[in-house]
Image (cartoon, rainbow, N blue to C red; front, side):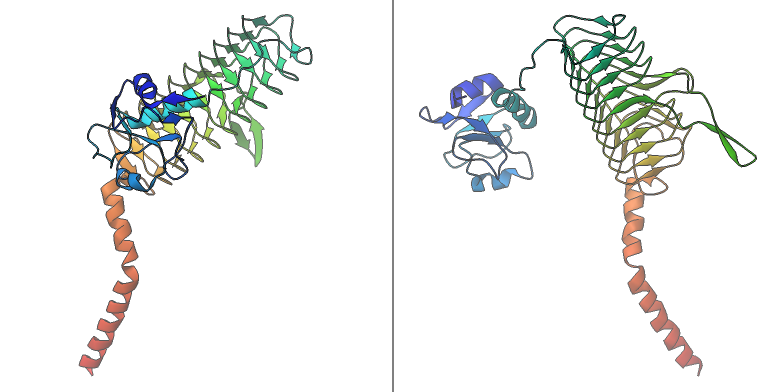
Length: 340
C-alpha cells in the first residue's frame, strides 16, 4: 500500500504542515523503528525526541511544537490516529467464511450467516453462533452457549455450557470461559465439591486475553460489562461482576463475589479478597492488595491497598530505614559513652 501525506491527513481528519507531495508512505511504525517511508506518532514526553526518529511523517497534536521541515499531520488524538493507521496499513487477514468438514457442528446448533468454523472446532447441541463470527481451530462451544455477531474465538478457546457472549467479543488463544467456580465444603478434613450451576456473561465489545480464566457462577452469572478489556493470565472468580470499560492487566486475581464499578483499572498482579465492592473510576497500582470495600474515584496502591500518595510516602520512608538504623546505633553509642 502506498499513500501520500495529504491522503493520510484526509484519512485521519487532520491538517498537514510542511507537505512533501513527492513523499510516498508505505508503512507505519514506532519512533525508533520507523524509516523514511514510514509514518509514526509521538505524545509527551516523547515529542522532544521526534527529531531523532527517521520517520518520513510524524503525527502530533496541535499543542506539540513544530518540527524542522519534516511533514507533520496534526490531529486531536495521536494515539487514536496511530491505531487507525495500523488498521489501514496492516488489515487483518480475511478468513474464508465456511464450515470446515473437519469441524464438529451439532445438528441441533444454530449457525448464523457469514460464519467461519475452522478444522477441529466443536459446537455442541443447542448452541447459537451469530452472524459473522469466526471460530478458529480447536475452539470448543458448549451446550446452549449463545455467541453474538462478529465475534472472534482464536485457537484453543473454551466456552462452557450455558455461557453467553455478546457482539464483537474477542477471545484470545487459551481463554477459558465458564470453568467451574472454586466452591467446596470442608467437613472432617475432606473437601466436597459444590455444584456450580450458573454461567458467564460477556457483554458487547469485551476482549479476553490468552490463558485467562473466568469462572462460572455458583448460581446466577459471572458478568463482564460492555467494553471491558482483560489481559493475559487473569483469573476472575465465581459470581464476580465487572462493570463497563474496565482495564484488567496481566496476573490480576479477583476473588469470588466481588462487584466492580465502571471504568476501573487494575494494574498488573493486583489481588482482592472476596465479597467486596469496588466503586466507579478507581485505579489500583501494580501488586495492590484490596482487602475492603473501595469508594468511587479512588487511586490506591500497596498491601493492604491504601491511597496512592500515602503508600508512596510510606515506601519512601521504608527506603530510609537502613540509614535511620545506623543513626540510632550511633546515638545509642554516644549515650552509652555519656553515661560513663
